[in-house]
Length: 236
Image 1 (cartoon, helix red, strand yellow):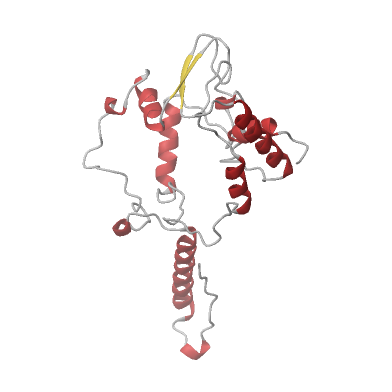
Image 2 (image 1 turned 45 degrees about the vertical axis):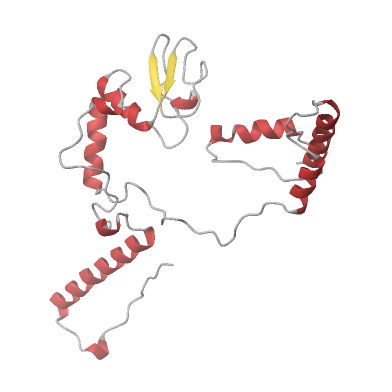
């Protein structure tokens, strides 16, 4: 790690989104400290007297003495969930067929056209719109293309209209004011989808009911002393 100069570290950290990482951190080691000290010295020697300095030796001393550390007791502000878990599989299949019917191309999970891989790349003269974060020439296909960036909602609206369109292009569904996270098998009163642990507990409870129903219909009701305890799943 120490062999990597700071300029290389900056490039690597900035480009981690290219392979799916949310962020990248490098340690505060002797290489970084030396670079910051040199920067602070250069600034003190050559910057104008009243210029705002990015680094000073005093600031570096404070940083090294009180380094930032992760909060081990941090918790989620909201419980994590998969946003489509509450949509029944049958409805998801209908969504998929509707999209394929409009000409959508199914791709594998992972990097694809937004970094110039796989099918669906922009051909010479084509115009595309993407919700990704980079659109330099040739990134999404041919160099002779135009690739625009927008929010997912604008991309969806543009797909429907065939041209770049804002959210107001399409009509709001009747009686729908906002996305309700608890629809389907969630908890509407709390405006949230169920967690993975809750879903597992619910599946086990449903399985127990099926087993009880089958045993009752086959053998009749058993005396409580003859009933076998079943495993119970708990989620933290």
